[in-house]
View 1 (cartoon, chains in turn red, green):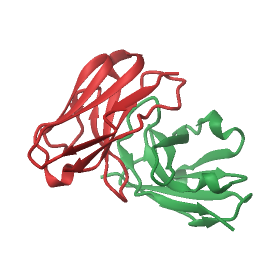
View 2 (cartoon, chains in turn red, yellow):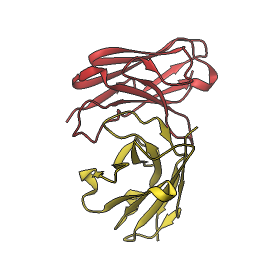
View 3 (cartoon, chains in turn brown, orange):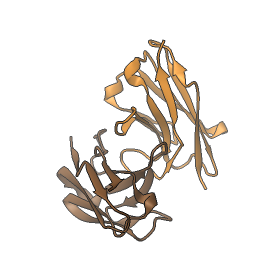
Length: 110
Length: 117
Protein backbone atom coordinates (compact mmCIF):
# COMPACT_ATOMS: atom_id res chain seq x y z
CA UNK A 1 0.00 0.00 0.00
CA UNK A 2 1.36 3.38 -1.01
CA UNK A 3 1.72 5.96 1.75
CA UNK A 4 1.66 9.72 1.21
CA UNK A 5 3.55 11.94 3.62
CA UNK A 6 2.88 15.65 3.54
CA UNK A 7 5.26 18.20 4.98
CA UNK A 8 5.38 20.39 6.84
CA UNK A 9 2.42 19.68 9.07
CA UNK A 10 1.85 23.40 9.54
CA UNK A 11 3.21 26.30 7.53
CA UNK A 12 3.05 29.75 9.11
CA UNK A 13 3.30 32.50 6.52
CA UNK A 14 2.15 36.05 5.88
CA UNK A 15 -0.10 37.21 3.03
CA UNK A 16 1.98 37.85 -0.08
CA UNK A 17 4.55 35.21 0.78
CA UNK A 18 5.24 32.06 -1.23
CA UNK A 19 4.05 28.71 0.11
CA UNK A 20 5.71 25.44 -0.82
CA UNK A 21 3.96 22.24 0.26
CA UNK A 22 5.46 18.78 -0.18
CA UNK A 23 3.84 15.41 -0.77
CA UNK A 24 6.13 12.39 -0.79
CA UNK A 25 4.97 8.94 -1.86
CA UNK A 26 6.41 5.67 -0.56
CA UNK A 27 6.44 4.32 -4.12
CA UNK A 28 6.64 5.94 -7.51
CA UNK A 29 3.29 7.31 -8.65
CA UNK A 30 2.75 6.41 -12.28
CA UNK A 31 1.54 8.96 -14.80
CA UNK A 32 1.86 11.63 -12.11
CA UNK A 33 -1.55 10.66 -10.76
CA UNK A 34 -1.43 13.18 -7.95
CA UNK A 35 -4.15 15.66 -7.05
CA UNK A 36 -4.23 18.52 -4.55
CA UNK A 37 -7.27 19.75 -2.63
CA UNK A 38 -7.89 22.81 -0.48
CA UNK A 39 -10.18 22.64 2.54
CA UNK A 40 -11.32 25.66 4.50
CA UNK A 41 -12.92 25.32 7.96
CA UNK A 42 -16.48 24.07 7.74
CA UNK A 43 -16.24 23.46 3.99
CA UNK A 44 -15.77 20.48 1.74
CA UNK A 45 -12.44 19.99 0.01
CA UNK A 46 -12.02 21.66 -3.37
CA UNK A 47 -10.00 20.21 -6.22
CA UNK A 48 -7.07 22.46 -7.10
CA UNK A 49 -4.63 20.39 -9.14
CA UNK A 50 -4.80 17.05 -10.97
CA UNK A 51 -2.22 15.05 -12.90
CA UNK A 52 0.36 16.69 -10.64
CA UNK A 53 0.39 20.00 -12.51
CA UNK A 54 -2.94 20.72 -14.22
CA UNK A 55 -5.14 23.33 -12.58
CA UNK A 56 -8.79 22.49 -12.14
CA UNK A 57 -11.44 24.74 -13.60
CA UNK A 58 -11.51 28.18 -12.03
CA UNK A 59 -8.36 27.78 -9.97
CA UNK A 60 -6.18 30.92 -9.94
CA UNK A 61 -2.77 30.67 -11.58
CA UNK A 62 -1.01 31.47 -8.32
CA UNK A 63 -1.55 27.78 -7.57
CA UNK A 64 0.83 25.44 -9.33
CA UNK A 65 1.78 21.82 -8.98
CA UNK A 66 4.92 20.00 -9.95
CA UNK A 67 6.84 16.81 -9.42
CA UNK A 68 7.09 13.25 -10.59
CA UNK A 69 7.95 9.82 -9.27
CA UNK A 70 7.73 10.06 -5.50
CA UNK A 71 8.08 13.81 -4.86
CA UNK A 72 5.37 16.33 -5.57
CA UNK A 73 4.97 19.98 -4.69
CA UNK A 74 2.10 22.45 -4.48
CA UNK A 75 3.24 26.06 -4.72
CA UNK A 76 1.15 29.12 -3.95
CA UNK A 77 3.13 31.96 -5.46
CA UNK A 78 1.69 34.79 -3.36
CA UNK A 79 -0.66 33.95 -0.53
CA UNK A 80 -4.00 35.69 -0.53
CA UNK A 81 -6.06 35.88 2.71
CA UNK A 82 -8.46 33.26 1.33
CA UNK A 83 -5.62 30.76 0.78
CA UNK A 84 -5.12 30.02 4.46
CA UNK A 85 -6.52 26.51 4.73
CA UNK A 86 -5.59 22.84 4.91
CA UNK A 87 -4.22 21.22 1.78
CA UNK A 88 -4.37 17.51 0.99
CA UNK A 89 -2.60 15.54 -1.68
CA UNK A 90 -4.14 12.39 -3.14
CA UNK A 91 -2.69 9.64 -5.29
CA UNK A 92 -4.89 7.81 -7.75
CA UNK A 93 -2.29 5.59 -9.35
CA UNK A 94 -2.72 2.42 -7.30
CA UNK A 95 -6.01 0.72 -8.00
CA UNK A 96 -6.29 -1.31 -4.83
CA UNK A 97 -5.36 1.33 -2.27
CA UNK A 98 -7.93 2.99 -0.06
CA UNK A 99 -5.61 5.25 1.97
CA UNK A 100 -5.09 7.61 -0.92
CA UNK A 101 -5.03 10.97 0.85
CA UNK A 102 -2.08 12.51 2.64
CA UNK A 103 -2.57 13.70 6.20
CA UNK A 104 -2.73 17.36 5.18
CA UNK A 105 -0.70 20.55 5.56
CA UNK A 106 -2.23 23.51 7.32
CA UNK A 107 -1.25 26.91 5.97
CA UNK A 108 -1.86 29.44 8.73
CA UNK A 109 -1.41 33.17 9.04
CA UNK A 110 1.83 34.11 10.74
CA UNK B 1 -22.94 23.20 -12.57
CA UNK B 2 -23.07 19.87 -10.80
CA UNK B 3 -24.24 20.06 -7.20
CA UNK B 4 -24.42 17.37 -4.55
CA UNK B 5 -26.46 17.52 -1.36
CA UNK B 6 -26.34 15.08 1.53
CA UNK B 7 -29.43 14.45 3.63
CA UNK B 8 -30.18 12.30 6.63
CA UNK B 9 -30.24 12.27 10.42
CA UNK B 10 -27.54 14.16 12.26
CA UNK B 11 -27.78 11.93 15.33
CA UNK B 12 -27.64 8.15 15.37
CA UNK B 13 -27.76 5.87 18.41
CA UNK B 14 -24.89 3.41 18.99
CA UNK B 15 -25.44 0.01 17.36
CA UNK B 16 -27.99 1.46 14.93
CA UNK B 17 -27.66 2.13 11.21
CA UNK B 18 -26.51 5.42 9.75
CA UNK B 19 -28.40 6.27 6.56
CA UNK B 20 -27.58 9.13 4.23
CA UNK B 21 -28.72 10.09 0.75
CA UNK B 22 -26.92 12.23 -1.80
CA UNK B 23 -28.95 14.06 -4.42
CA UNK B 24 -27.14 15.02 -7.59
CA UNK B 25 -28.40 18.03 -9.54
CA UNK B 26 -27.16 19.88 -12.60
CA UNK B 27 -25.71 16.77 -14.19
CA UNK B 28 -26.17 13.11 -14.89
CA UNK B 29 -25.22 10.14 -12.77
CA UNK B 30 -23.61 8.57 -15.83
CA UNK B 31 -20.86 7.87 -16.69
CA UNK B 32 -19.22 8.64 -13.37
CA UNK B 33 -18.06 7.12 -10.10
CA UNK B 34 -19.79 8.36 -6.94
CA UNK B 35 -18.27 8.15 -3.48
CA UNK B 36 -18.85 8.50 0.20
CA UNK B 37 -15.94 9.98 2.14
CA UNK B 38 -15.87 10.86 5.81
CA UNK B 39 -13.81 13.09 8.04
CA UNK B 40 -13.79 12.67 11.83
CA UNK B 41 -13.59 15.97 13.71
CA UNK B 42 -10.11 17.47 13.36
CA UNK B 43 -8.84 14.56 11.28
CA UNK B 44 -8.18 13.64 7.66
CA UNK B 45 -10.24 12.20 4.82
CA UNK B 46 -11.25 8.54 4.68
CA UNK B 47 -12.91 6.66 1.82
CA UNK B 48 -15.93 4.62 2.81
CA UNK B 49 -16.81 3.27 -0.60
CA UNK B 50 -18.02 4.15 -4.06
CA UNK B 51 -20.12 2.98 -6.93
CA UNK B 52 -20.09 3.22 -10.68
CA UNK B 53 -23.14 4.54 -12.51
CA UNK B 54 -23.86 0.97 -13.59
CA UNK B 55 -24.44 0.06 -9.95
CA UNK B 56 -21.18 -1.79 -9.30
CA UNK B 57 -20.01 -1.12 -5.77
CA UNK B 58 -16.62 -1.05 -4.07
CA UNK B 59 -16.15 -0.89 -0.32
CA UNK B 60 -13.21 -0.03 1.88
CA UNK B 61 -12.27 -3.27 3.71
CA UNK B 62 -11.91 -1.20 6.88
CA UNK B 63 -15.68 -1.14 7.06
CA UNK B 64 -15.96 -4.87 6.45
CA UNK B 65 -19.57 -5.86 6.01
CA UNK B 66 -21.07 -2.80 7.69
CA UNK B 67 -21.45 -0.65 4.59
CA UNK B 68 -23.89 -0.64 1.71
CA UNK B 69 -23.95 1.96 -1.08
CA UNK B 70 -26.79 1.97 -3.57
CA UNK B 71 -27.98 3.96 -6.54
CA UNK B 72 -31.38 5.28 -7.61
CA UNK B 73 -30.92 6.61 -11.11
CA UNK B 74 -34.58 7.62 -11.41
CA UNK B 75 -34.06 10.14 -8.63
CA UNK B 76 -30.41 10.97 -9.43
CA UNK B 77 -29.53 9.82 -5.93
CA UNK B 78 -27.13 7.46 -4.25
CA UNK B 79 -27.20 6.33 -0.65
CA UNK B 80 -25.02 5.13 2.20
CA UNK B 81 -25.94 2.74 4.97
CA UNK B 82 -23.44 2.04 7.73
CA UNK B 83 -24.59 -0.45 10.32
CA UNK B 84 -23.61 -1.10 13.94
CA UNK B 85 -22.23 2.38 14.43
CA UNK B 86 -20.16 3.42 17.41
CA UNK B 87 -18.77 6.72 18.61
CA UNK B 88 -15.79 6.35 16.27
CA UNK B 89 -18.18 6.72 13.35
CA UNK B 90 -18.90 10.30 14.38
CA UNK B 91 -17.73 12.37 11.43
CA UNK B 92 -18.64 14.73 8.64
CA UNK B 93 -19.86 12.57 5.78
CA UNK B 94 -19.33 13.81 2.23
CA UNK B 95 -20.79 12.54 -0.98
CA UNK B 96 -18.67 13.23 -4.02
CA UNK B 97 -18.20 12.60 -7.73
CA UNK B 98 -15.17 10.48 -8.42
CA UNK B 99 -13.42 7.67 -6.65
CA UNK B 100 -10.02 6.57 -5.33
CA UNK B 101 -8.95 5.65 -8.86
CA UNK B 102 -9.39 9.22 -10.04
CA UNK B 103 -9.87 12.78 -8.87
CA UNK B 104 -12.86 13.99 -6.92
CA UNK B 105 -14.11 17.02 -8.76
CA UNK B 106 -17.42 17.72 -7.04
CA UNK B 107 -18.23 17.42 -3.35
CA UNK B 108 -21.35 17.84 -1.28
CA UNK B 109 -21.19 20.34 1.54
CA UNK B 110 -20.92 17.54 4.07
CA UNK B 111 -23.17 16.53 6.91
CA UNK B 112 -22.10 15.95 10.50
CA UNK B 113 -23.34 12.68 11.91
CA UNK B 114 -22.92 12.20 15.64
CA UNK B 115 -23.19 8.77 17.18
CA UNK B 116 -24.44 9.12 20.73
CA UNK B 117 -27.12 7.79 23.03
